[in-house]
Amino acid sequence: MTKRIITSFLAVVLSVHTSMAQSDVKTGWTFGVLPSISYDADLGFQYGALTNIYYHGDGSYYPEYLHSIFAEANYTTKHNGLLRLNLDSRALVPGHRLSADISFMPDDMSDFTGFNGYQSVYNSVWHDDNDNAYRSRAFYKYRRNMFRAAADIQGRITDHIQWNFGCGLLNFDIGRVDIDKLNRGQSDAHKLPDIDCLFDKYRQWGLIADNECTGGLFPYVHAGTTFDSRDQSAAPSAGIWADVFLTYTAAFANKSEFNNLKLNANFRQYIALTSSKRFVLAYRIGAQLTLAGKTPFYMLCYHNNLTLKRATYESLGGSSSLRGVMRNRIIANGFALANIELRLKMVNFDIGTQHFYVAANPLLDIGMVLQPVAIDEQQARIAAASTNDDPDNYFKFSKSSIYRPHVSGGIGLKIAMNENFILSIDWATPFNDQDSGKKSNLYVKMGYLF
Image (tube, rainbow, N blue to C red; front, side, top):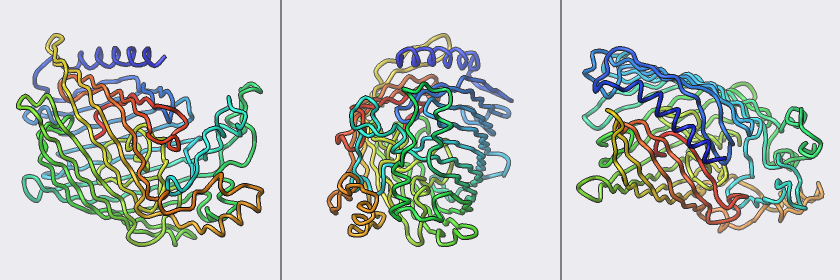
């Protein structure tokens, strides 16, 4: 099944984009409409449509553009959706780069395995309906619908250093999984049992407070600087990209205790290992820390970014951070991650006037908790016992478990057209069974991870 998905997806994408790129230099407006088809081990098979409209002006900026308008609508077989409209412009504000994004992301089955990584015990058999210990496929899930509106502007300080400022609004609507909705049209054998899931138990135990169990509205502002010396943005072979920025998030009404200030720092480097640049070592390290205030648990799953390049920015775990590790496995007040890839261009070929290459990238991903969510062991044990639950099935109370790194490894395959359009297929496996109920995970996306 996965092979058929990849083959059909590649055929449609290449045929459409090849028809759009017959000249060496583009002028005026160009656009393309594509099926939005991909696969993610955490989200399932995705289906929908997307369009990208470019304005190149007189062509003097090509292959860069003056304006880009991107729209996408999709839904996945695991009840995760996206409605998104994004603008990226180098000309609306002369001398600056402006981006704006409006997105709505409904998620009927958002992942939640507890706080602080390995401090929360993950029992894969509880949501494996082929196991005698099965409880529910929704046991480690909750409902999280997110709306986001954001605008960011970037200006130049020097040739490689830019300043960044942005603001936005996040609205979260959360709650327990809607079992009745998911059971509609299902046979009795596939219906989900209506039991207390981990989200419900955390509410009963006081680990999720009453004022954070339904969501809220949060405006934010952020500001920082970026250093960029990469030779290109899609698949760099040399240079450094780094940023550091602060994000202040406010809250309305009875959520005022959730005002918080966070610090983010990221560093990426690309090193060509041969003069032909066919072998490139690429790595990324980054961290997000809470400097002041408190964050509701559902916003601990959000990874702050200066400029929105993709729709979702989840906490550690999943296709955008730790491949092979389940989505949002590390939920904490502060965390760090590292990604290392050896990018090998194996084959170059042309089809007509289009240039293609095939590359492989062995990968290693690492993430860990830096600032844990406070959990009082005695209170947690008493609370679990009050609902007839064994606390050892849910918690591992030791500092070594909190700060133990989560590690995964694997390999990726990239098929690129004209350097910028890159189909990515990543396969990865966690090094610890606590990080996934599967031995390995597959992701079919667009572009390199970083």
